[in-house]
Length: 113
Image 1 (cartoon, rainbow, N blue to C red):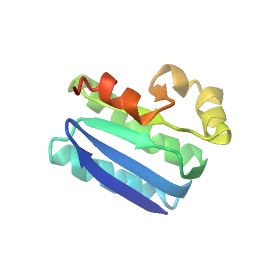
Image 2 (cartoon, helix red, strand yellow):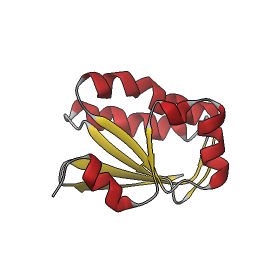
Image 3 (cartoon, rainbow, N blue to C red):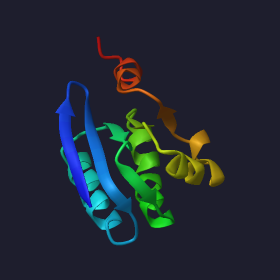
Image 4 (spheres, rainbow, N blue to C red):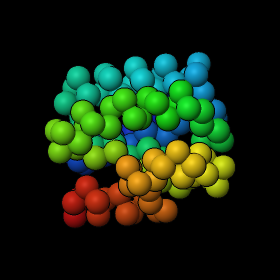
């Protein structure tokens, strides 16, 4: 799995490509951990190239969700394929995180002019 990273004004865009499973979730965990240690609190996860997500992959995001939110940060997911969105909805995570359809919505949520 590749994880594209782009630092935008006010947030970091992470775009995983391929499958986010037990093995590749370690890479995502390391990426978010490093960014948090640098003080990054706002994340936009572009799921347009994510073809599959396992419970371990979801677990990475869940493990950081409280920490990010307690520091007034945001974790936003966007452009999900139906099979990925189904997993979020099945586990009720669509009620805990923000899911958007277009990149431009992220800038509005992060209050970026």
